[in-house]
Image 1 (cartoon, rainbow, N blue to C red):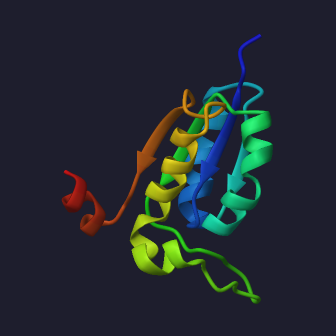
Image 2: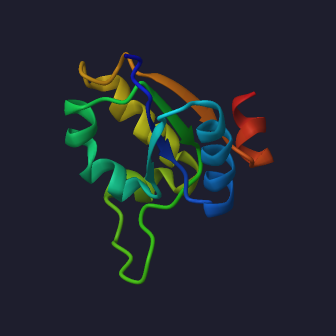
Length: 118
């Protein structure tokens, strides 16, 4: 059986719904796990590493935390800022032998990000 689990890291609820709805309509049995911020990604990393998805769809720009009780970010986040959250998460995936082989699709709707990497 083909693994149909995707980890989607995206903070925009409309874009998340669009991407997830499009994929779910085309892939029967698809399971999509959504993570909306970098703090959740880091805190759930061990779970991701122990049971890696077949694909990660990663936004580039997303916040450290969301919701009413916003956490103070660690020094590496404060130094790099909001624009590099996706790259920090990608770095974490690539540095761990359990996750470095996961196929990853990186996207951004920000012209600022696209011009800086393109």
